[in-house]
Amino acid sequence: MKLKFASILTILCVVGCSDASKEQGSVESPIAMEYESLVVTDGSVDEAFKVEPLEFGNAINFISRAGVVNILEGVVSDVEATGYVVIDKAYRFGSKYVLVISTGEYGASCPATSYVLVFDVKSEAVTSKSTIEGCSELVESLSEGNKLTIKKDGSSLTIVNAVI
Image (cartoon, rainbow, N blue to C red; front, side, top):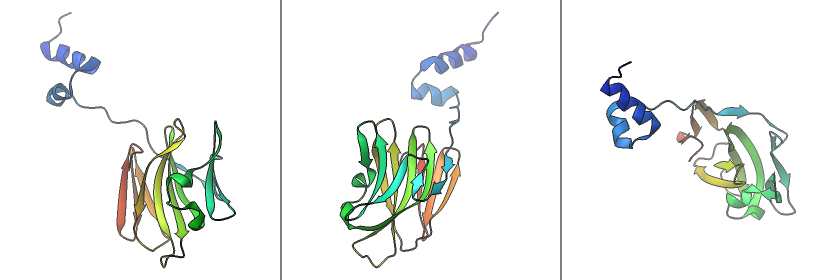
């Protein structure tokens, strides 16, 4: 059986070649993973995250291998100043969770500050975060394959492969 030169080059590129070689002759395969929309009930998500009041402020707790971790400590500057905390939307992308949360901090004139955060279950840490500007409490989202778009008050944030 004879193989043509282009077929051999394609086989070699699939096995491993530089990005420059891939650009010349092969097409990258699409990512098969998609965002899975999760149900948020009574301040908890997928039994992994739970909103709980503290003596001052609020927490979003995650039970890690080392014990309970308040993931809000990696998001807001002062956890004790969070007047309220609500998980608006939640998605899973492999071992990562994307949470959209609203908080009321320092009695701000806007009803809610919205944060989008990525929590990696493997490292048990917030790996990236962002703020979505605007005073509205209404947050919309649209997931399409490996792309997730969060919108609020005309501002939008696009997350690809659970990376902000």
